[in-house]
Length: 151
Image (tube, rainbow, N blue to C red; front, side, top):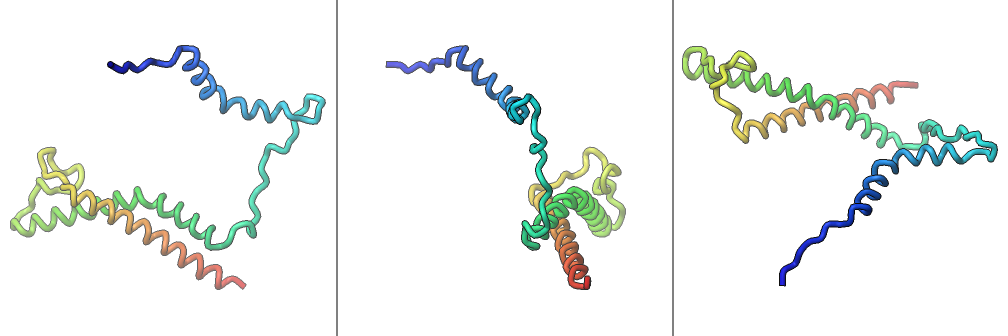
């Protein structure tokens, strides 16, 4: 006995696609339809801003650190990659006794130059993450010092 897989009927697929595509648009329309009974919508759709006492200070510090660390990560990756390339060029040039153009940093190296190994790539990502976390921790410490200095 062989088993065959049947595809669902076309109308069911069409209804599912319609629900998925039109569902998000129906939410605001339904909210506008609820009004004061005279066809006017209410203005209660705007959320009120958070008050400072709603969240503890440590959660606000954690959120700020997360934003700073994620924002600093691309810059830290670029700087760690460039620093590694300059260090690798310097190391191989000193070891050979003359400049080694195949190890030149960035766009100065030829296309046939050596590529990063897997361990080097992991090291660059880890160093970028450590640098960005260091920036976030430094911001936290400076902010805490500033908060304690306020009267």
